[in-house]
Image (cartoon, rainbow, N blue to C red; front, side):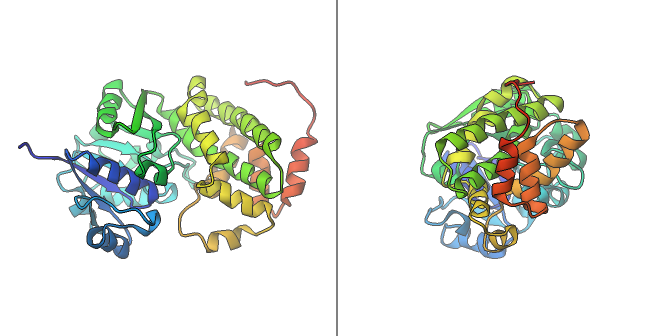
Length: 338
């Protein structure tokens, strides 16, 4: 029997664990996860559970390490799945052990606050140049808990080349996890990051007590904002109508498992952002991403009213009801997707 291909998953949160489990179940890969938290690694190894995916039993073959050199030893595929604001710190250390010919796939959704860089740009500064030539991004509508329960799911993988995207597609494709390919890394990265900000807005509207009419407006006009900024930054307009755009937006704005929607809902109910974040064990990427998107839009002169109001709620103590009223009372205009 031929030796199994080694895969390293860097980040043991819910999404990284779900993807690690998916790969381990294929039985042709030897999958090792890296966790910053020793108790999480011990739990994966000893009782085959992870508190970030409570109630889910992981395959015995899925192993965890707290040492990056051991996690990455011999890995020909590296999946970066840390929270977006930690990717630089984690992968700068990991980069010392990433093989130059490894296929690197990013599954983190966000924009770095300090630099306003996408994850592919951050990784491009710290990983071997040869690895980045085959770099891919995985994004789209997928809740970790539904992936591990084998709910039929479709996502997109964008690669620097179509050959790299096809290779990653073969690695991640399963009978319940369908992969579509793309070469629009910019659009796929931005769709995955920006939808979290709109999900905060959708949650706020629900928390204020509004129903389907309001949420439909938030999703549709939110998509218009995402598309405007995405195209201005070099993404393909069609990408934002696909899985990484509209697909992920619908899921995150309406699904009860959405952390970002939950944060927004609690804001709409009157809680402060400090109260909400203090009792969350997982990261809601949209909170930090709102800051980055606000600055990107301002710097590029792109109109993003929802982003402006969410930013105001998070940073300037704007009352959620006042923010919604400000959106509704804006100067009437035509529906344009420019």
